[in-house]
Length: 338
Image (cartoon, one colour):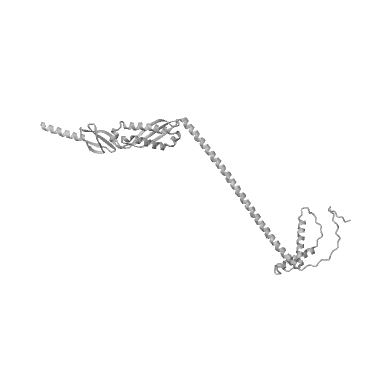
């Protein structure tokens, strides 16, 4: 069965409509934005999903990736403020916020961002000294981010981060810095050692001072106690002397015997302890000494009472006097008896 002329026209129209429909349906993936141009002029931006355009009148102008992207900045030679040459490389992160501005405000977007970042790296790092450059990398990143983000703002771009990956000074400069660091650490070690020695000396001096103070306080306390003991002894001696004096005033002969016996015993002790006395030959009457000691006992009974003193032992009878001649003593230790 063949097709007539009208049937062929209908089939052709149906096929044409289907082709027009397929040409007008556009699917935009997630993370992208498509710009639409009508006769070469921007009209709107397609969002992710299924979209319809007018075939043969509108067309897709630019397919923009609005996800955050990374841009590797190649190594740059930078001259610092103090005329030191260093090599630095960086990485930049950016994101398209306005697809139309990014598509029509600048040509070759990535190349523009790359060159802008490289220029600002040389400007920012060139205004700093080498020491500041090596120690303040975070400050460099902040300054670069601020400058580059302000520059790409009219393009509908947001620069999220600019990070300096590596800074490499020349080898001879690195060696000089290593020697400087070593000298600085040795200096610090010597200073710490000197401070430790000084603190040890101070502590020793403080210890000696405290020891001397404690020793002086001990000597003062000992002298005070010794003086107090002598004072007590003197008071006791004065009290004994007062009792004896009262007894003498009352006419007691035993009190006089007490003083005589005391002086007699003190004289005997001094003679016995003399360093140059080897042989002592002198008359001694035991009965007189015993009588004096008896007087001392009587005084003690009068002072402390008869109950505190035990009954005296019976006095032995005096022996018959023995008459003997005492030979004279020669000062040279020889007997002068003929």
